[in-house]
Amino acid sequence: MKYKSTRGGVSGISFEEAVMMGLASDGGLLIPEKIPLFNEKDLKHLSELPYTKLAYEIISRFQEGIPSDDLMQIIQKTYSRFDNVNMIPVRKAAGMRIAELYHGPTYSFKDIALQFLGNLFEYILEKRKQKLNILGATSGDTGSAAIYGVKGKKNINIFMLYPSNRVSNIQELQMTTTESSNVFCLEVTGSFDNCQSLVKDVFSDLEFKEEYSLGAVNSINFARILAQMVYYFWIYFRTIRRVGEDINVVVPTGNFGNVFAGYMTKKMGLPITKLMIATNRNNILTRTVKFGDYSIERVHPTISPAMDIQIASNFERYLYYLYNEDCSKVSEAMERLKTDKEIDIRGHLLGQLQRDFIAGETSDEEMKNTIRQVFSKSDYVIDPHTACAVHAAEQMELVADNTVCLSTAHPAKFPEVIHEVLSVWPEMPSGLQNLEERQRRSERINPDESILKDFIAKNAK
Image (cartoon, rainbow, N blue to C red):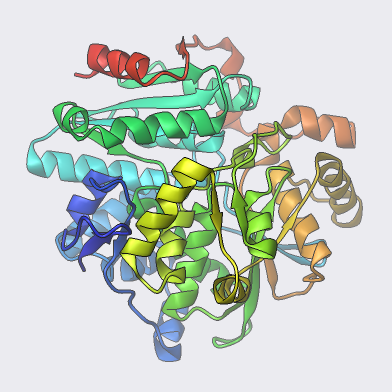
């Protein structure tokens, strides 16, 4: 399997090269040059596998350079750290299914991909006798999951940007209290989009990127998408009665990475009928699906901060397929977004977009009401992001036994919201206890590319 850029300037690179490159050197995102297909017989075989072997079967279709035994060891090392023996429980609640993706070390769905990516980085760096400085931005859970994926690992430093006063207290504590010498947290005076733009600007300076061996852990790195694709198969097999039946999946998303992973599995042959995007007030993806209006507005803080995003990075990967794999059209669209702050998707393109996705948005008050209603009906506590998905499913009349809402974070990561709504504090898992007592370490900076570069240059080893 070889990889290419959505913008056409990079092609024919290996999986390992794609992992280490992160953002393509032409500014695009890396994608596989072909998508492997699974028929019903393949799916039946996959349905009988434990999670580690399922991950191996899917990931191995997208890479050739890592020996089979080494890849299996990376996968086993990755998922040995998860709490739940079933990896991802799929529970019945609110008349649907809820897939709990948050049983990793930081209680976020992003652990599933970032623990894998951290071990993958370590393997490749050791093999190549190289060092890596990871640069990333987070709207909440990516930061702690990425940090926990690489903290203490040899040959790796991580520089994580997060928006000031825009992540939950627990999320910030998870990032800033690791006491690991290879972790650098940067609190940016701005929004997540400011953080993400800084990261992209620094990566676009190819000379600086090469000099300091920069790599990406955000979902611009295809290895993250790949690891997320695995759990769509896992969830499917735990929802259907027999292989071949269809399911609907509702995905709370802001940066489009989680739902793009589902889109890829659908292209691979997984029987997903409706793939739904659930957004909060920052509704650029909902506007795009409903009206073809991908225009950037200001970011509004909400109680579901991981989705407080306007520029959805992974949407570029989808555009590549929407434009029938025409890299020149992708480049033109991304240039228009940069200059005009919008991409106009109308006519037959909007028709295709609406066949691929449906979408809905949820206000803060609707999220709170949904948390209250789910607890009342099912005696089950969900976090605001999951509430966003449940409400969106109800909006679109998708409440059914074959509809799965992805639950992306443990409710204990948002204790103030849960207490406000239910008048009880959520039970705190052991990994989230005593964070307040640890020493914090972070640096506050303005959203300025030169300031960020100076900080990296000073601290990169």
